[in-house]
Image 1 (spheres, rainbow, N blue to C red):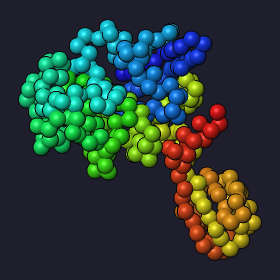
Image 2: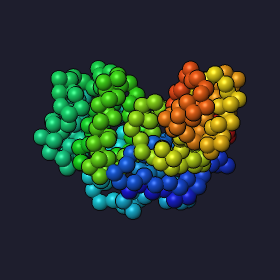
Image 3: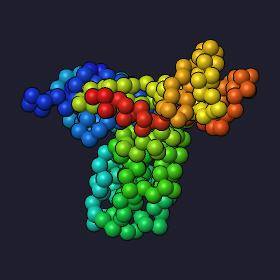
Image 4: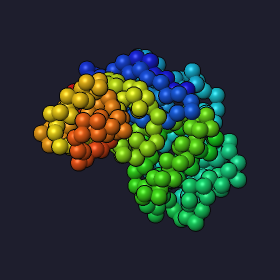
Length: 290
């Protein structure tokens, strides 16, 4: 479990983060979204004990990070790229980190293979591409077999197969009962992954909840032979109807219901498309409202 309670960080007279309260639950993937400068990274740094809160609490499994026993066994994190020494090979980096976390050499070697770097383990990490460095960072975060993962932009530099790999890894972690908190600007990718969403702006939580609840639901885009009669029939069936001059936008009916009503009224339908609001739509509507 990850919890923040009225978490605030003030620099001089500026509140970088102000009264941020949210929960990331076990068995679920939580997305932390915000524009640049919204307070996302500061929030993650306070969770990991890298920045001291001005007030409020940042808790992992009920404790501050610095109070956790064997923190690398409880929390795995990816916050910054290029944390490995550029002159050190990927294999040497993993061996060093394994000693720090109390993991075995066998696990370090297995993780290099798991993240697809078995053939690059002998290369210096300074020669790695951005995507390879991200894979190495994820492998490092997994060394202690932590139940909690906290990741800031982990998909940066990954190609489409790499993003699919990361998505599967994080979903498997959540399915096994782990907690995942992830920040990313790749909203289309994040939508395929997250269960819950926290949107922050100007240091405050603007919206939070399950993704399915934050999306407005499905609307039907309908073009037919008589929009006026269709509007009347759909509204009589309890739907809400709007028009953009070219089509009707209908909420409150399934495609089957809308089609059956049109058939009963003997009105031809030329187009009937179910349009679902996407995470990007939710995010922009909240962010632009500020």
